[in-house]
Length: 317
Image (cartoon, rainbow, N blue to C red; front, side, top):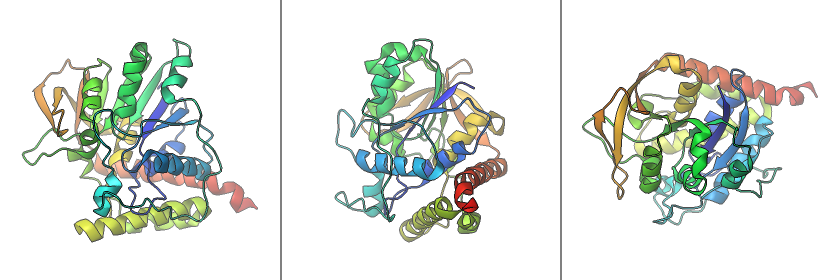
């Protein structure tokens, strides 16, 4: 597999913030069957850009990830940003309160993600794992059109393509024109849609063992438990879904998923996605089924490896 770049809207550490991007990063940190994480681009989505960058830097500190973190777009080009945090908290002006006792040590890159890719040698190739709104990805394609030849594939979490109860999914709803740009780019795209990720579930009992891994385990445990409490309070839901981690595991373990080629469409106002037709030759494929038990096994194993590695120096002191 080629070098990996991820585009995220991380929110671990923000009161009421979703934790799935953070769990995905932890899972990736525990892997060895890939060429390496070359960079992390942050987009506004679950939370504001500044909060997302702060959360991502903090996660890199916790996990010992020495990778550049690039601030991206603070909002879509054609509409104001509606964060997932404001929707969860039920208040468009809700404060994004930092719940941890200290701030990240590292600083984000001064150069933007688009500039960084533009300065790389044209032979540089990478896979892009995009688990937030598509604003950064579209900006990259529009500002650096030749980079489409550098992106070997995109794997994304978003949309709702099959089923009678479909409604606009958050990542697609935030910036529909950006999604349309990606759909029309011709880059091989695998989509892990909401109708698949809603079948996943992480329960409180699954994360108790994280408390054995010092500061990193405590932070991820507390942030995840806080998100689970939000879901129970607001939706009456036990545990939490694993939207973005499923995209990461699907990328590294394609044997656990089955996909179908589609010609996709998106409503440019609402962000509702649809399938114009199925096409086995299409470069756009959507996941239609997956091995849920194997997914959870791989995810928890990878997170455990990452936590053990990150906590090892502290345990030896």
